[in-house]
Image (cartoon, rainbow, N blue to C red):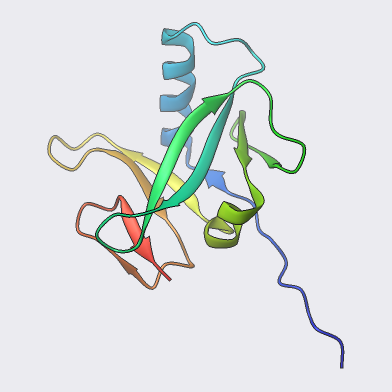
Length: 117
């Protein structure tokens, strides 16, 4: 039998997260071509850290998604860990910020900034 390829799912934003990102893009006067770059890097208390950045031009091998009017860019290696992730935004005083609802994470740290698979 042939080897099945796992289908990559999009990275999505909640309405709250999309509104916050649009607000930040406008506040910093970013061009309309700006996109949210989502990724992972090694480190953190659980093995991987989530990363958020801004890019004007995706790399040739990047995956590009659109969610709630925001363009999202992710490199192929990060997408292996982030496929199906929904990003939310919470305005709580102590634990506020962007939250990653990652179906691939088997464990997350208390602050929600790192995870393991």
